[in-house]
Image (cartoon, rainbow, N blue to C red):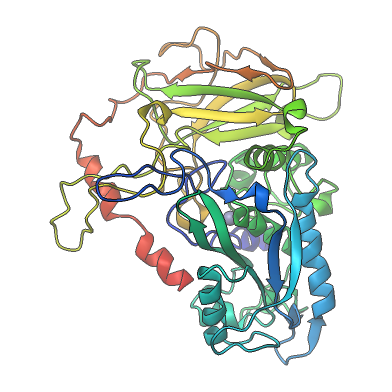
Length: 473
Ligand SMILES: [Zn+2]
């Protein structure tokens, strides 16, 4: 269906405007001190908001949420505020996570912005400046889409999150912003000038996804076949398990199909980042390492999915509906650095690599995820090669093609096992099932730190930082 293909690209550029995406789980992970460079947060620990400083205080643009091209109000401020509160409430309602928000009132003045409806790019930049200095967490209604277009962003950006500030000593997020493109809710749908429209549930889910980034979540890849098949509307079992944090809006709104806004993966990961007293009674943990065929060398950047074993006595396919994913090496840096090209013109000095992510070699191929109690299969696959930049999943951007075929975990893992042999992993609440390691079959030669493959030259030269940073300016 043509309309669905248009929708597919909508979220592609809406996301976290940072080059430091880290994981199927947390979006930013702390890294150690290196050389003269101080530590960046806490080594190997995801950046989150400080749980001891809840609620998170936000401030809202006092203007309307959406206006027509002629300026007529479509969604007024009060209705927009109610919708924002409802979207934040999706995350605070997770019973196994400790998150709360409080509305601190209207946006604070900053530079050319004094009060009232925030309308211009200059006002936006000034308010973002005050966000970057930690003064406020703004929620900005770009009621007519003029700020998004004024920033040079595509009109298919539904909204975006911009992380403003982190405390590099404590490893906590300290300021962040959300922008909503009201043009998607202005009641106008035209090809020229380009003006998309979404139903309220689709729009609100796109912004709720941005709030997931605001809280420190990365994208997750589960039921990728729905995107690849391009069939609209998506089938129920696949949609039920499709994370809200999937990088691209591939399907109808989850709420429109009668499902909770958050999929099991979203609830599991927000509970991992913000556990409360009941989390341990509601989740168990599966962990392991993904290896090359030698069974010794870890592989980073592989998508790992735990799926509940289907109950044949129900109509539903639980293996599609209840699934949680992680990317191997999600706590390890995506760019360990190299000094070979540091002197080459146009190549930045990349000697110590990214500030983010651990350098503990035991984390290179390691994954860990919380799952609801039950019996699971565990499988590996590549991160989809189109998931790059603002749509990236996991620590590597662009992602690698997994150096072996997709397979399931079984008890006798080897480089020559039967790919479809799957053994159950039973997890009770509070359990930590370790050693669910997968040895990939017949992999290409390993590319570890002791080799000098030409591939090593690619990454530091091709980082999309400049493009991405331009977009958030
Ligand atoms: Zn996103």
